[in-house]
Image 1 (cartoon, rainbow, N blue to C red):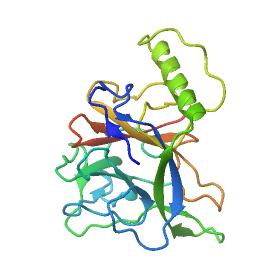
Image 2 (image 1 turned 135 degrees about the vertical axis):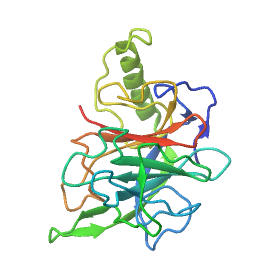
Image 3 (image 1 turned 60 degrees about the vertical axis):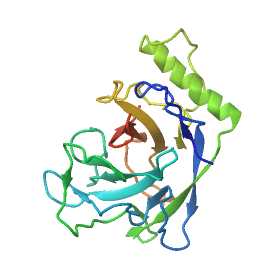
Image 4 (image 1 turned 30 degrees about the vertical axis):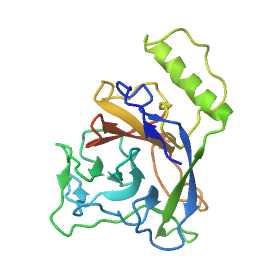
Length: 244
């Protein structure tokens, strides 16, 4: 099952892809070579490999994962982040958070692509001896339970109201839903900072994790979530991390 483009969304606060699907992790038994959604491992390139580097240091960014872009054509959004014990991906156009789309994608103007053959490390987790162990997890997309879907929509509607973009909505109670593709985003502070115009469509979001050795991987968003957006023509991407 996969979400489908609605063809109606305008900007990051409307549902560009429906239905909203929960993302659950399944450990890969062998290296993944198919163009499917996953965290870690190596990119499954659909065109020539294009590995971004940090604009300041020239060091290759870390490959975080790849996500299927809904639609009839097989397309992938590849996420790369700079990481050195700091919160990752907070500024969407710094060059330290890069989303590349293949096939027929556009490299963002702020991204710096390394020379041919550039290859960095991929997502990792803490091992029991406090070493960094590479990981690879497949992403299964499952129907969102109705109560979870309703809670996500309630949070999104409340933030629309707080932005003066919708009718009054009661303050939501309970935790915000996390880890899903499609639907409307549940942003911790209600705005896609730097991306809140009609140029970007919400694709997916996932929470950070990794302080426990049993966590599937390490991502630091300051106890928040990461958000992947794509352009209206599905050819360019952006990433934003946010925390409350």
